Every structure is written in C-alpha cells, then in structure tokens.
Image (cartoon, rainbow, N blue to C red):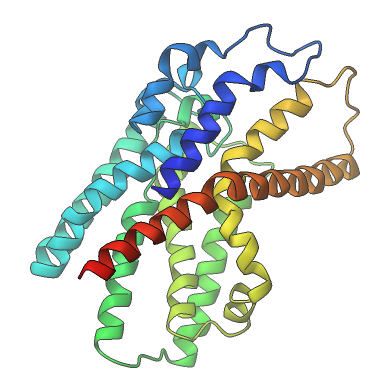
Length: 300
C-alpha cells in the first residue's frame, strides 16, 4: 500500500500541476503530457513497461512495473527452490540462459548500443537483477538455516577482488571503447547479470557479518533516514531535473565543476522534495496501516 500511495500521488501531481508551475523556451506547451493523458492508467496497473519508451507516462517508472511483475512471479521460483531445490536451480538456470540469449539476439539483430548509450531503445530489456536476488535470498536462507558460516580469508579476499573487478568493469569498461556489434551484444547480455552478482556478493558477506569496513559504512545509522527516502527520491528526482532544465533560458557551458554543482544541487533538492512527499503521503499511510494492523491484532 505504501509504494502504491507514493506512486499514485506522484503520478497525480505530474499529470495535473507539473505543466503549470514554470515556463521557458523548451517548456512543453501542453496542459498535460500527451503520453499521460491517454496512458496514465498503464502506470496504475504496473504494465507501463510494455509500452514503447517514447509513449510511457513518467518514463522512469518503467522500473516500478518491472519490479511489481518480478514480485508476482518470484514465488514460482522460491516455492520451487523450497520444495524441490534441483527443480528450482534448473528453473533459474533456464531463465538466466533464456534472458541472456534473448538479449544477445536482440542487441545483435537491431544493432543496439551498449549499456545506456541509447536508453530509449534498450529500456524494454528485462533486467536479470531479480533472478540473482532470488538466488541470493535462497543462499542466505540456507546459510542461516545451517548456523554460523564463515568464509576462508583467501576465499573472502578473492571474492572481493572478483566482485569489485566485475562491477567496475560493467560500469567503466566502455569508457573510450569503440565496440564491434558482437562485443556490444555480449556486453548487453552479461553486464547486468555480472553487476548483479557483484552486488550480491556485497550483500551476502555483509548479511553473514563478513563485510568488514564495508558493512560498517553501509550499516551507519546516519544513513537510515536517507535510506527511507530513497523510494520517494527516485519518484521525484526526474521531475526536479525536468523542471530546471525545461525552464533554463540560456545555453549551459559545459564544465566538470558545473556538473558537480548540478549533481549536488539536484541531490539535495530531490531529497528535500522526497522528505516533503514522505511526510505528506507516506507517513499518513504508514500510520493508517499500523492502526488497521493493531485493530486486527487486538481482536485476535
């Protein structure tokens, strides 16, 4: 309910008030985003990722649709892993293979850019993060079920080296590289899965109390308030950026320091807007959920 409330409130603002709060040379001369005017209900049903990127309302919300759809199908894999581990692992393996092969074929056939080079064309690509997450959750469950679990120091060091190398290569490996069509297809096929496995390693060692200084940083209590605002920040930060850049009345001279200032400014304003959104919409829903839960608990 909490996630739905935040999305619906943000969608309501974007489709009604957003177009009236500023102006500029490139400010859209419409009362409502045409994509939202006729397709807003796709977001309500969490199926907006099936639309072409150029036709989606709140285009960045495609991930929420993916997330909801993965949430619905996850029990199929989890039940299989719980009841019949062999079948569960086989099902995950087949899914990984199908996703990888499909991405390779589509990337090669349509000569897609690697990574986010052409996000409008690759946004429909299904992420592998969910399936790696399912596998990670099952491994953590089995580890806790078997009691304490400690990796050998050599294994721990090698794991960090491999995970760091893989994730950094996925993020920065394309820098100043002119890839062939086959290389692009391979990168698009494996980069997401490899990056997800790198993150899965960090989560695994932290959950099993083997993360060391990384776990201490990620568990720092000062980050808890910000972590609770990340969802709202995700929803509102594109609106903040669009409002600014669509209102600019002169050209922007590119400088690295300028982008740093933009980044810090957008970060602060986005989280400030997320805080307001959370206080106005999330907090009341949280209180309502607790009230309803307490009522039912009291009856029992």
